[in-house]
Amino acid sequence: MNLPAPSTVPVPRHHVLSVLVENKAGVLARVASLFARRGYNIYSLAVAPTHDERFSRITVVVDVESAPLEQVVKQLNKLINVIKISELDPRDSVERELMLATVKADPEVRHQVMSLLDLFEGRVLDVGHDELTVTLDDHPSRLDDLEELLRPFGIVDIQRTGRVALPRLERGPS
Image 1: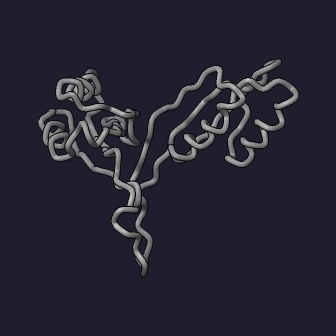
Image 2 (image 1 turned 90 degrees about the horizontal axis):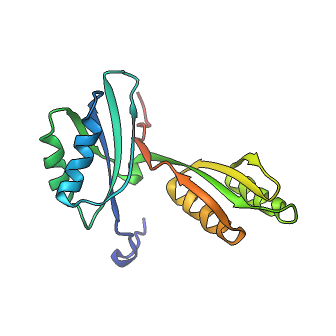
């Protein structure tokens, strides 16, 4: 097996943490304020209840340079409502993000925007005279790629949810 030279291996820019917490009022505020007090830069944050209504899962993506992983985990573990913290390695997890974008697309170029969406398996959600509202849910890097390709048409408005992630399932003999 040929491995790339060390200089060509991408250096991670973010830590992706999955934090299982009690589903109670104020928990998200305490977690977010912990990051703010320590000066850790949150790249994205997503939270929702799990299959068990007693718990929520917070997926937080933190800038590596602003937040040493050991310190972040140590600080999070001090919070009473935190149940479990897992770092999700991108190679061993499934990540998704949702993007909604309104793009200038007069009738002459509309087919070009729709062709791009077809390539990315995105969808048109709303149609105006000179604009389209489009959506894509995929790996964050694919959203980055589509966003870059939509820019020349003119992005009127854009919203992204932030990353959600779960560990990959084990494959092999049972």
